[in-house]
Length: 350
Image 1 (tube, rainbow, N blue to C red):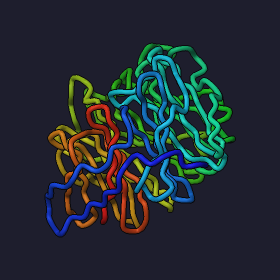
Image 2 (cartoon, rainbow, N blue to C red):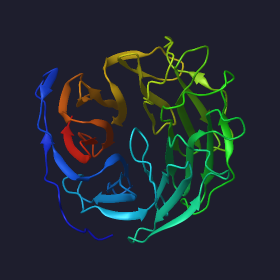
Image 3 (cartoon, one colour):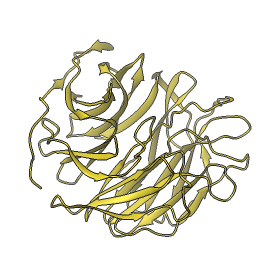
Image 4 (cartoon, rainbow, N blue to C red):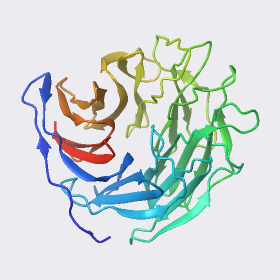
């Protein structure tokens, strides 16, 4: 893979024992919305986002210090790329896999072969225009990938559907139901999450049961072929007549265990399945990452992206929303977010 050009400057952000510190904004990678980030086993970073009908792609081979000039990896007419709807990327052993949805509610997959050659491979949904919310997620490990989305088929109510690939996103399985709410619908405007490690696949989504908009987790131990019972996260409830449009963040550890972060009312909570939730802040658009077994969190608070270090130090990265975190090494993470239709990044020392 050839580095095209360098367009962003290097910024490392360090907080010296403060609990709440202003910091610089970081670097601008390109113009667009809805960034999504993946890291390969050589620690290269791969970024996608949307602008107009274009799925934009940029990469870094030096730990996020510089990113290549963004290119249009693919064109998808009427691409959905706003309000948590945007292209999703994952790294497989065969290259990069990307999924994206159009405004009609059809999801398409694209692959890159490791040599810069992109191509469209399939339409994921095997029933026309059933993903009208455009809310989806993608995870991969080895040659295997799992895609999930909100799906309206059969009764017009949103449910969680998915598809699997065992060849790096080149072909996809028949669609299958992962969860349907007995109260008619899952939360209709909150992005679901998926994480995968070996045969362990976790799907997190905001449910709608008894008037409550709470987060639920469902687990597969056979690579996403079958799923167990959905489990509510946390002990509290959020009774809400409407959708908060906030899905939360999910990771799976090396040991195959899930960790989550999500919003309830104005608060951000973190939780492991079967354990009480812990409040860590206020805001929305939360995400998380682990570094040497320690958790790092980011979210949007008062119009700014904030990051919470393992020691409880909170830093402000700049104006914006929808942060994404990836570990770089044992002492640094990179945060990517959007602000005023530009994609920003900052490296943070832990």
